[in-house]
Image (cartoon, rainbow, N blue to C red):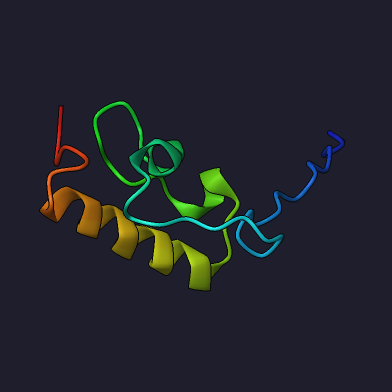
Length: 71
């Protein structure tokens, strides 16, 4: 039988107190990949509430041209 190794669960950065705003594109780049797509929850470790919030902030930053839609 193969044994499964448990990985440490990722912690939501926003639940720990870090804030993300659409006016700070450098912080938002952590949540997008090299093509400009929003990275999913299972990769970033965000909770569902904050993943939706980050997606909204990324879309706002794209709308006012602080971040590109794609590269």
